[in-house]
Image 1 (cartoon, rainbow, N blue to C red):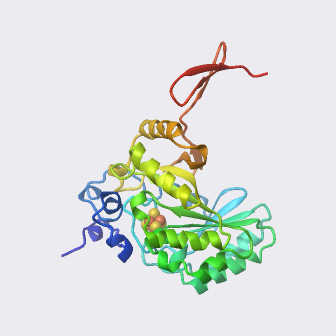
Image 2 (tube, rainbow, N blue to C red):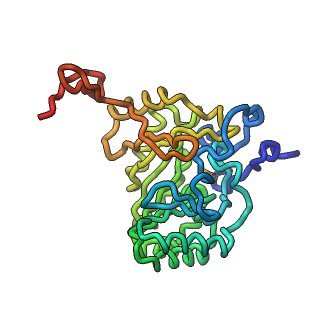
Image 3 (tube, helix red, strand yellow):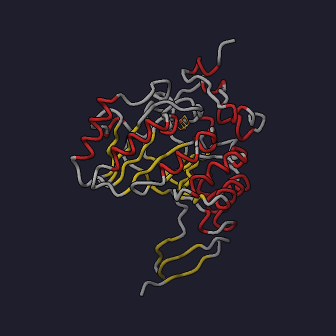
Length: 316
Ligand code: SF4
């Protein structure tokens, strides 16, 4: 039988670990294709404008001090809401001439202080190839930090070997940003993989996408965020779902997202709260979406507390 994912142009792909959890609604909806993807009438091929700011293949330079380097367009899972779903596939690693051009671009620009490895999933590369890329980045003196954005510790935790974790903990400070959307994704093996990273001295942040039917209820997000804190993972971003084609059914309204964040502020410590953000379509960057707690009035700043009470604050 033909894979429904093939009909959408984005084949189904799951790791054995995620297939084992596919009876859980919060997991299944993320990876199993849905007929609603075929009825997509809106959406963009490149929702966050990677291509608009790409000086060399695989590189995006949107902000002055940092670049995104897509070291591969392969992933071990295909997330149905992915904003790069039209380019993610089996392309393998970034070809050497393109990698060399990207590294030369970075090396020639001292204003660039951080390189963010993304993809696809950078950890779908072999350990040897990833280490080689990191070594070449470590050799660029003006880079302060590196960053890796990955879903691997959750979807294929066995790939975070002790040796890979140790490798990521050496050299320039490397921040690991884990993509995870629901507490049901986090198995005991995933917890062990994250522990290997933290033991190796790799700080971990999380990013999640707000997804209708997956994590758009306060109690679901609260369970995820509390779980992450227990694993020493600092919640970093909650992304408003991008305008990817075929992902309309996942998208909430911004007002719904703001209401969720306001409700979480009353339930969780600040350490557990991510920033709710929108990548402005067209490549114009990322901005926090609120909710707003402040309003300028004739009496001074009107501040709304987590329970909805209003208070006046005066600047000195
Ligand atoms: S792992 Fe990341 S890049 Fe790959 S399909 Fe999922 S969201 Fe997209």
